[in-house]
Length: 430
Ligand SMILES: NC(=O)c1ccc[n+]([C@@H]2O[C@H](COP(=O)([O-])OP(=O)(O)OC[C@H]3O[C@@H](n4cnc5c(N)ncnc54)[C@H](O)[C@@H]3O)[C@@H](O)[C@H]2O)c1
Ligand SMILES: N[C@@H](CCO)C(=O)O
Ligand code: NA
Image (tube, rainbow, N blue to C red; front, top):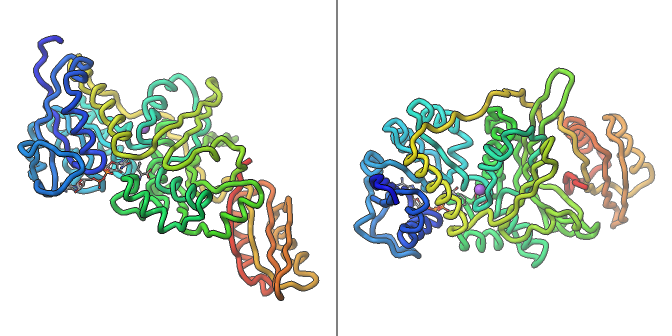
C-alpha cells in the first residue's frame, strides 16, 4: 500500500443497509484498503439513538447523534438514512466542503439528483448511487460507463423487491397483500414507509434515475406515470393464472422515435405477462432489468434488488471506487444530460390492455360494449364471456392502443348503464 493518508468515512444511518455496511467495513477493512491504496477509517456512524437495539453489534464509541459534526470532518460521506431531509442538507453540506458522497437513497436522487450533481461538479467531488437502483445489481455503472458509447432504446424491468415479493407470494401461496408485505418488511426489503413500495413511488424514483441515465436527459420524477399494486385483487391474480400469465410491477423507460425528434417516456404499473416470459421467473425480492441498446442489443441484469447485506455490497463497491479516485486525484465527472430529449405525455404511450367487466346479461350488451371500443378507435382482439346470475363477466383483450384512447373507453364504460362494474384493468406484455 502506498503512503496516502487514511480516508475518513462518515456513515449516516445504521438500519438494514447501514449496519451491514459498517459490519463489512469493520470486518474487511484491510482488504478494501488494499484495493483503494489507502486505509479506510470509519470515523463515526450517525444514528438517532446510540442505545437502540441492533441486529449487528457496532462499536459504541463510533455512534453519534450529531450527524452535522460527523459530516463536517469526513472525506467520504455514506448516506443510508433514507428520506429527503435531513439527508439532502447533510449531503449538500458534505459536497460544499469537498467531500465525496455515496448514497442508496433513490427518493433523494430522483427528487434532488440535479442539485446534488451540480453541487458536486462545482467542487470536483463525486456522487455515487449504485445501490439506489436494483440493490446489489450493477446497473447504474453499466448505464453510465459501459454503455456510454451506445444509444439506449429501452430499459424495462422489475425494480422493486417488496412488490415483487408480494405479487410472487399472492401467485404461489395465495397470500394476501397485507401478509406478504409484513414478511417483506420483516426481511428488511420494504421502505421505512412501505407505501413507497406498494404505491409504486419507489419504482417510479428508480425509473426517473434509469431514464435520466439511459437517455442523457433530465427526466423529472413528476413526468413518470405511476401506478402501484394496491389495485391488484385476488381475482386479477386468478384471472392471469387462468390464461397462463403472471402479474408483475414493472418500470418501462423508452426512447420514442418521432418525425419531430425523439422523445422519452418513463412509467411504472402492473402488467400481465406470459409465464414463459423471462421476467415471470423473477421470484421473491429479486430484480431483473432488460436494457436494449442500438449496437449492444438486449442485455439482462438480474439479482438481489433489496436486502441489507446485498445492498451493502453495492454501497461498498461505490465507496471503494470513489476512494480510489480520491487517492489518484481528479474531479468527478458531470452528470450527462446533453441529449435533453422531450418527455412524451403518458396519453400517447402504446399498450395492449385486458379489461374485466361485469355487465348485464341480456341480448345486445356485448355489441354495445364492443361499440364503445370502436367509437374510441380501440380494436378488440379477444372476448371471453362467463354467464352469471343476471349478470355476466366479460374479459376483453385489446390490440395496441394509446393510453389516452383506453382511458376514454374506460370512462365510457363506467358511464354505460349495462356495465355494472369495471373489475380489472391490466396491461399485457407478450
Ligand atoms: N433495505 C433495502 O433493501 C434497500 C435497498 C436499496 C436501497 N435502500 C435505501 O437505503 C436507505 C436505507 O434503507 P434501510 O432499509 O437501511 O432503512 P432503515 O429504515 O432500516 O434504516 C435507516 C436508518 O436511518 C436512521 N435515521 C433516519 N433518519 C435519521 C436521522 N435524522 N438521524 C439519525 N438516524 C436517522 C433510522 O433510525 C434507521 O435506523 C434508504 O434510502 C433506502 O431506500 C434500501
Ligand atoms: N424497498 C426497496 C428497497 C430496494 O431499493 C425494494 O423493495 O426494492
Ligand atoms: Na444497483
